[in-house]
Length: 87
Image (cartoon, rainbow, N blue to C red; front, side, top):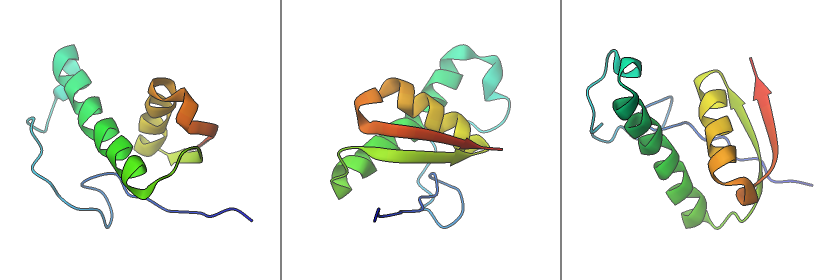
């Protein structure tokens, strides 16, 4: 069988609530801030992946998580075996 781990992105669900380095709000208007926002989430997810020792995964993302999962798979293609997008 395969191991399944459900992960909430930082600040969502049951995850921790670290200090967010950027202002919340209309961050998508400024491409520099948008890129920093994405980096905040993807860097944290990559650090988690490395800490738990997952070499390659089937990654499922839903809604905002689907967007971030797609960007993660593009940034780290050797870490994602399959990408599954829901909703």
